[in-house]
Amino acid sequence: MRNKVLQEDLERLLASDFIDFDKLRNTKLLITGATGLIGSNLVSALTYLSEERGLNIHIDCLVRNKGKAEKILDSEHLAFDCINFIEADMTTWKPIKGTHYDHILHLASPTDSSYFLNHAVELIQLVFNATSNMLEATRDTGAAFHYFSSMEVYGTPHDDSRIHEDFIGSAPLTMSARSSYSEGKRLCETLCRAYFEEHDTPINVLRLTQTIGPGIASDDKRVFAQFARCAANKEDIVLKTKGGTKRSYVYTMDAVAAVLTIMTKGTRGEAYNIANEDAYCSILDMANMVAKEIADDKISVLIREDATAAKAYLPDLCMNLDCSKLQSLGWKPSIRLKDMYLRMMAAGWS
Image (cartoon, rainbow, N blue to C red):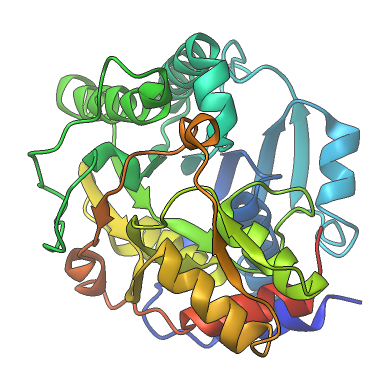
């Protein structure tokens, strides 16, 4: 039986009036990163929509390990005949000659900040080589290409000004190994645009903020996941910085709804911010909210600065994403920050 929280999310998605579901009918998709947080929710959503609306969607998931992928995307997602797993290296994989896809969604990427710092060379090579290869696959198969980027391409803005997609003015520090992720994403965005202009490849860039919701791994190291575990275990939240960084967040299924909106209604060649603007807050503010409202004021927030641990994080910044471009397509988020935590915790850890 499908998880209750996920079932509610899927039913809410099905009732959305801003997604052109008919444009997904009889489509064939290739997805990388299908076992990640957004990827697994996206696969679940597409299979559910295909069944409930009779859309006849077929999904190829490009994965490193088929057995592991099948375990993560459990049997409730595999109940339909629309999912096929392709076990391959995404930096070298080539589609079989004559294969057609309507959409290629490239989500796969490391997300652990410590990996950005300790394996910067491998990260840069991986994100570029994989994206380049998937863009070539897009040309070979006639697909539209959707690149999942990050808010980190905006660098480290230092005030609460709203950040539109054309924002320039705060490039990441190129002399920091931690910038391997943000600079890699920036390079791949430019590569996508180059394919659009030089080869007429239909592309979209999706700049996501951090997503919170069902499907978070029990060992996820991102701060919001650590806060949730502290609340669940009634342990104090210990910050290793002053928690001054501000950013927006977005609920997992709201992010999926944004993806489907851009796929079906977005302008090709464009980038779109994806965030819940009402969830903009500092890390310290979020920690205090979790301690008070999620843990019922039974835990405290402690600040114990650690210069070594802080190297894995970006310097203090203000990432106040403006999502009016996406909202002009009809998309609107439905879950506020507190409820993101409650629903994530109610669904349990993966």
